[in-house]
Amino acid sequence: MKNFKQIALGLLVGALAIGFSAFTSAHNNGMKIKRNAQGQIISVTSSFYRLPAYASNTSDTDPSHYVYSNTSRADCNSASDICKSEWTTTNAPSNGQSPSDAGSPSYVSDDPAQGVYNGE
Amino acid sequence: MRTTNFNYMETTASSKLKFQLSQPAKAATAAVISWMCMALFLYTAYAKIVDHQRFLGGLQNVQLIDGMAWPISFLVPIVEILIAVLLLIPKARRAGFYGFITTMLLFTGYIISVLIWERHVPCHCGGAVEKLSWTQHILFNATFILLAIVGVRLTISLKSKL
Image (tube, rainbow over all chains, first blue to last red; front, side, top):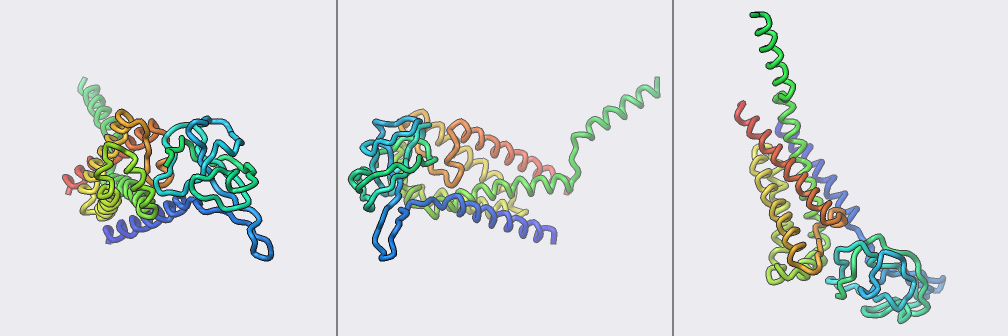
């Protein structure tokens, strides 16, 4: 009975750990798309990686310093620099595009993820 | 004189007793430590499974293990889950602690070797754990290794009293 109670409590702790993991792992790779009443895209907000040549720990609002990538290998290598920033554009970006390529870029904010883009 | 000796013995005995945990307290502490270790492994294993492509991509970026990245990306979460199951079962807890310590030592060794030999140091440890800096990461691992060692000692001491 004592073992049964311990296993039951352990299962509860395990379930909480998995629930918490699901909560913290849910990162939004998707774009935030705004549409008008007709369903046409008004704006797209997505994360762009800052090019390693411009890596620093201060904000950078030059759209030519950023590139979009949603490949599985794209990542931020360990560093204390700002790795990504959110930009609003008129079109959905595709891999390798800068915010300017996706149309009328507007800087939104820096992403909390720190590091330097690995170029993938 | 005899009274003085008696008092001295009593003081020594009581000072030793201060550091002794009762059997239920030992059992409870061992259980709590095992749940903490289990929760850590389930937390990180889940993150690795849910975002497997990212975990695999991160391992492929490390030249030291590039050729083995694919099997390692499956092996690590499976081992973590198996150890978590061992830690959950009271009778298998000690084996779980040994597995946990071994795995954590391997992870810490991996972090240190990557820091020494790799130009880039990606970590796809899963969830919030990968937000830690490298020093914090090593301290975090060391804390859990020490906790697991305490867990092993408690389970040994509980077993020997039975």
